[in-house]
Image 1 (cartoon, rainbow, N blue to C red):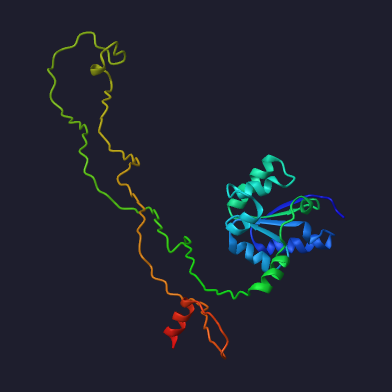
Image 2 (cartoon, rainbow, N blue to C red):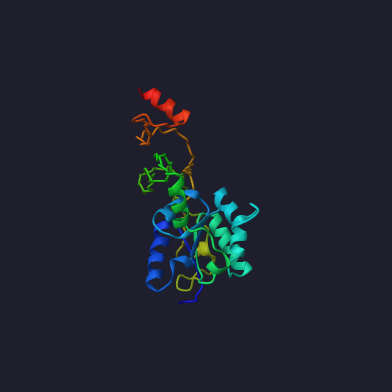
Length: 270
């Protein structure tokens, strides 16, 4: 017989049950497998499809059958296993968050011998029989989906603009007038000598004018600001739910005591 201790966590009962099948093929006994869950409906799903012992943390009957005190039943159950305190705390938190805990240990059944589902079933079969009623319940989920988007494109446009700019320019006015006829002594046409520019052979005068040059600079003239806000609406969703009811009928003259709540329901349907 294998002696390995196996501790695994599962999100759903289907994954746990598939793992149990694999372990049995490897030679592990079903009597050495123990399951700890938080919710009763999760434990019932495992029990319906296996003969495993399932401890339900939220089930008062299961707690009372295992420990003498209802204080922290999951921790007390994990404390009976061959686990370190750190692993016990890790698994306890995982179970509290809804995980399914599978513990396989060949020596566990020798230390704790819980009542197996088959044993309970045989005892209950002699005393009572149960009919489970089911109903569908709505579970609302909301998902964020994209319904649209806002696209802002920026483009460049061109336009012509005329600007009148006053500019100044110099103009020359040349006039000619008679000289003074004053006699110049020692003036030699071949050797003019040193004279001022106004008295030279030629005269250069610069003519200045203003010209306009265009310089373009980009500037911020406008801003586009987009704000997003959340608006809440109420959406009505209609769904058909199915629910199982029970009809109680008495056949013959047998002495049958029917619960008053069942009788009332039948009277309402008659």
